[in-house]
Length: 254
Image (cartoon, rainbow, N blue to C red):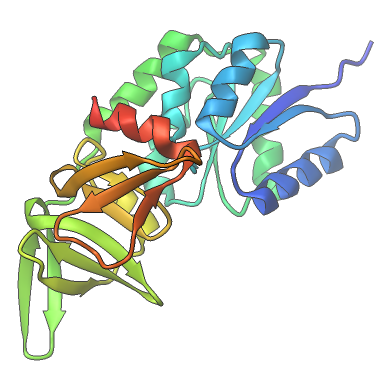
């Protein structure tokens, strides 16, 4: 008897999640999507109670952190297909042992190829293999050491250790040093997340990536959000959402 494939999608961008569901249904109308989860917290909770899945699609960057955190809390026995908006070169480690990756926006042909790969392998990766690949990726990562700043008549460099935080302002991103000097940079916050050492920098919200040394007073407010004082200080309040609060506290304590 034909058995429909069961899948789970871990994706915090609703348009991307809808597109993936549409592509899966287009490939096979009987394709069963058991859950669409939008955070590390939701994924950990779901997989703590459920394991009968044929394939899991996991976005690498979620609102409350990198999805690799999921695997530190739960064992997922199903094959994993990572999805990401970042460049292919950074993900070569995952394209083996039935662990695959798809670049967003997801292409129908490449999705079908990944699913065909699962059919051909007829096996599921062991957790040890997944941990080994993630460890290999993490250990081989080279983080950015300095930024080249272009000024009207000269160039200068700012060491990453001098950076207090990066901030999105209108249509640009600026680097703010511990000495409160501000410079525009060419990268987006999403690109900076991939370049910076996650042990030293954290994406507080959509506007700010802060260094550990820039974190000042932390206050809990009634909604579950965290209010952060940065050094150098900003005029406007800086918040970490309720959904990211736990991950942020874990980062501080790591």
